[in-house]
Amino acid sequence: MNLNIRMPIHRPPPDGEGSVQVKLDPNVKIGNAKVFAVYGKGGIGKSTTSSNLSVAFSMLGKRVLQIGCDPKHDSTFTLTKSLMPTVIDVLESVNFHSEELRVEDFVYRGYNGVMCVEAGGPPAGTGCGGYVVGQTVKLLKEHHLLDETDVVIFDVLGDVVCGGFAAPLQHAERAIVVAANDFDSIFAMNRIVAAIKAKSKNYAVRLGGVIVNRSAATDQVDRFNEAVGMQTIAHIRDVDDIRKSRLKKATLFEMDSTPALEQVKAEYMRLAAALWTGDTEYNATPLKDREIFDLLGFD
Image 1 (cartoon, rainbow, N blue to C red):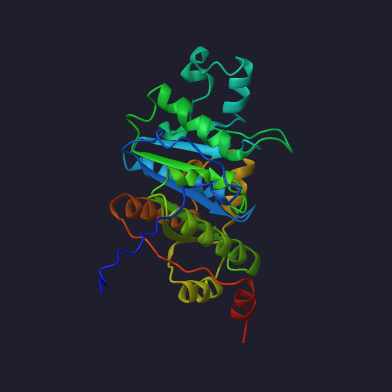
Image 2 (cartoon, rainbow, N blue to C red; image 1 turned 60 degrees about the vertical axis):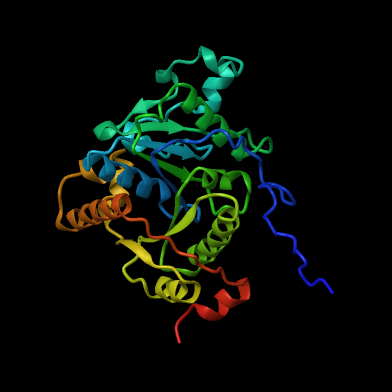
């Protein structure tokens, strides 16, 4: 009896099959830059985190590009002091003939030389955010704007329950979660961990850890991290200067110095240096919804 039976090799299905996730052109790649995608619950401070991390990278001498992926197009306004037109806006103005666009139509230079792009989004109830991300990266490639970029930061809307807004994970090497020390943002973080795990089957993206934001303590996040296999990579405390910086349309690095603010700025600089030199990844396992209810809270 011949027992030398070759078993079929299981390969993950192409991205998008069996799901509602948008399919992007696999040939459109960013290049040699380190690419980070920042996710988290709505209103948790992703744009503030992304903008100040961009400045920290720029202060390390890196050429930085920040891409806002929210229809509100306010990711970069503390860097540029204005609400920039979105990529979709400018493409629409030329009837989607991208060859008619100039770089200055959709790329603005922000504080300390950070390049800023707002991808925007489709009109409410139409289209898909993944298409917008794909068109933005394609446009940047056509104009050779990624060839001399060291760091790209995607600031992404929401908590990735939509496949379209998971699209930056196709380009990123590390996905970073912003969360507070509370149930709602940790619940959203768990969804993000699940999305990253799904995307990692077909792409190089890996989970890069969590930034605890607007929180004096980290005990609930610590409990979640221990349960799923992840770590906190930065802790940004609830400092009032951060709130004021948004009102002043300024990054933290432009604000008048206070002892508390200097600690926050130092934490951003430490984080940028660690992300640039490090390659730590976490193979976290998301929890079931009921498990999070049972895990968190005070004894």
